[in-house]
Amino acid sequence: MIIVKREEEIKKMREAGRITALILREVAEMVKPGVSAYELNEHAERRLAELKAAPAFKNYPHPSGGKKYPASLCVSVNEEVVHGIPTKDKLLREGDIVSLDFGAFKNGYYGDSALTVGIEPLSSRKKQLIKTTEEALYQGIKKAVAGARLGDISHAIQTYVERRGFSVVRDFAGHGIGTHLHEEPQVPNFGIPGRGPLLEERMTIAIEPMVNMGNWRVRVKTDGWTVVTVDGLPSAHFEHTVVIRDGEAEILTVVD
Ligand code: MF3
Ligand code: CO
Image 1 (cartoon, rainbow, N blue to C red):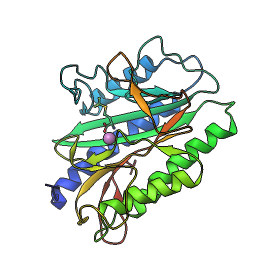
Image 2 (cartoon, rainbow, N blue to C red):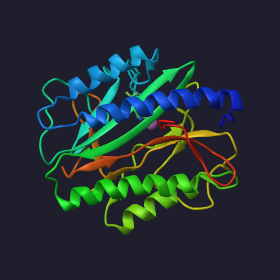
Image 3 (tube, rainbow, N blue to C red):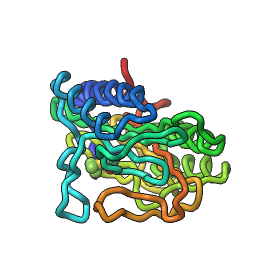
Image 4 (cartoon, rainbow, N blue to C red):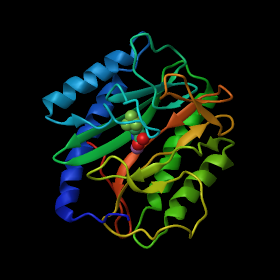
């Protein structure tokens, strides 16, 4: 069942979304050669404490049971797609593309957002990959309106990406979000227009295209979390938490 929120709940989600966006922006600005992923996570955790919010990802149980996610920020570099662990030895370098995925929990509600930044000098293909993934997210958000179907979002993302010669990851998807980080429905980045559940005003979903430069195949590394491309080519990721509205979606993971 897809939960339709009340406006008073959406107000709380706006606050969770604002904190998520603020901290994500701060860590994105820290991305420089020589900085470790560990430092980015440390900053995010310090800021969460200052803003009296909790991490959305820390200790999140792995979907296949068992292991819990060990950090508050996911840092996925180059061929890493999502869920990269921010270790001390993960040092950022020139030419890297760095996907940052972050979520905050505040007053009972979650925010979830991601972005990818490149460290200059960057190949033009990597720049194109980042730009295409970000724009694919906005193409999806454009379809996130009352009266549309979930497949309209998925299809818009897929066609935008594939027309530019890139591919969408199939094994991971966006999701409903609210009092839980992951709620129904799953929001795949590929699909058929006019199919799937009807979108209603005040449903809240996280849309998150993961886009590969090569083919869509991915695998999980032996750390149990880090998703990488099978072909070793880079991948980018952008995500916003949004509210379905009449006419135009409201993006929650923004700073005022
Ligand atoms: N945005 C990601 C997701 O929705 C982040 C999850 S990291 C995890 O799946 F550790 F919480 F799984
Ligand atoms: Co998400």
